[in-house]
Length: 323
Image 1 (cartoon, rainbow, N blue to C red):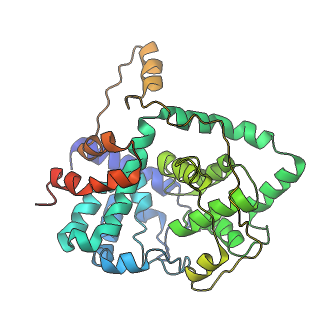
Image 2 (spheres, one colour):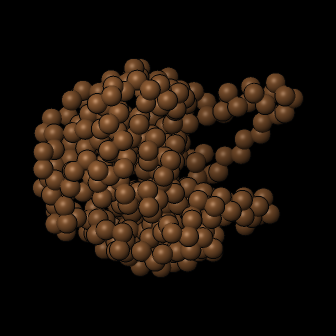
């Protein structure tokens, strides 16, 4: 690791540690704040690698609850804060497993890369979302505000949903499937604006990432892939929570959501034009350093994930991880 990378690692470690109060856990291992380090992230990676193949593919969708996260890696906070990189994770997994066995896990890592590349090329999606949060909250009716307050406090009476709201606030983490169920119920059953749900997640998730979080909420709402929504069902929730939850009264219709977005915002060069202009006004040049992993993948993050997914073997060969 270069001196520059080591400095970034120390900064990220302090940042992640600061977001881990003593009563908050990333996983059931109840990791203390001192564990928010690159070394701890690499230890977690080593522990997970044996389970990253067919076992992960078979079990990844099940949310056993905060007491048993062993079917997933729980590495996302370390990746988010750049203590461990996507390339390091995939390299470690492919040293142990063939791609055919670890394909599902590798795809999940590349989903993160895809989301980041997509948003980097369309920064207006982020700026429009972030600018909409405060006025959207202020624009709620009294009844809608009461629903919102109940939702973030975990007192809607919806089985599972209230548990996930409290788990998020208390631990800073939710299983990915629980995030999807929560977002669907928030949007289609509670009829709350997706922007406020995305903001709730971003404020509490230790792995809260502008790209993955914003675009995943847009995907559930049917905005990211226009017309394709994600509708949570009681049967699916019961199946993948080991029967812990079976909510009643969930919406069976995914109503149309309109946030004023323009379909297919024109891609722009991911050069941070607003930041560059602000720094230039102060006489400060902006030098952007793009990791090779992102530089190779981001140009393909434009037509949807499935065409991108077809390029993963080629990208891995470019990373010299496949023959």
